[in-house]
Image 1 (cartoon, rainbow, N blue to C red):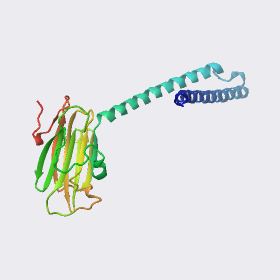
Image 2 (cartoon, rainbow, N blue to C red; image 1 turned 45 degrees about the horizontal axis):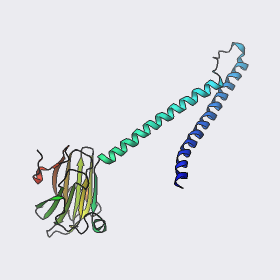
Image 3 (cartoon, rainbow, N blue to C red; image 1 turned 180 degrees about the vertical axis):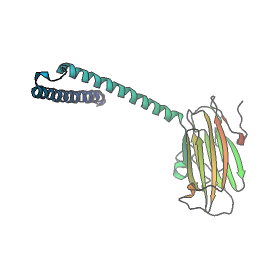
Image 4 (cartoon, one colour; image 1 turned 120 degrees about the vertical axis):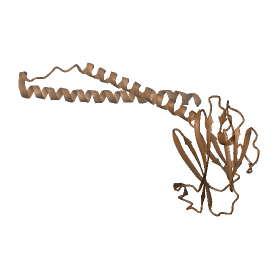
Length: 244
């Protein structure tokens, strides 16, 4: 069955290519026939003195058309291949962000996590700004086996209807994700092969419209300037992490 599938995977593109070329030949012949008929009618209408340039032979016309079509298809194939390669590279280079909580967290590498826990393989940095607590985890290693940065947040004040959002700002993009308070959750940043700077912001909103609060300015915002160096190491002045 596998051999049959492999053969079909080869035959089908070839058959499609042949079908396209046959259609191009038919169209080319139809165009030539129409042009030839028009010239004959003009010759009959105006006589031998009609100013009519000689046409190339049908065979030459079809061959030139076919050659042009083949060159065009090769160019399209090359351009499409280059675009696909770039997209694959972008998927590797550009960072990804995920929010783990509840069942998603339990099915992840960090199952059983509780706010403030140590996570093996990560350095933990605790920050508190008034009633807002942040736990930030930075991978100890420069390789890409695990996500590079994990962030958990909690609110310990008396305000009601408090909402959080996290934002990531790269030189090429700026995205924000909103959520309600869930301290036993993780905001996961995996920057893949990206090297350079980005800004992480944790935003707090009090007594806001739950559906539209992301369109408003936050009541509080705490920012962290990260830099991923060529070595893969991470620095952040707000966390006291420097790279020599």
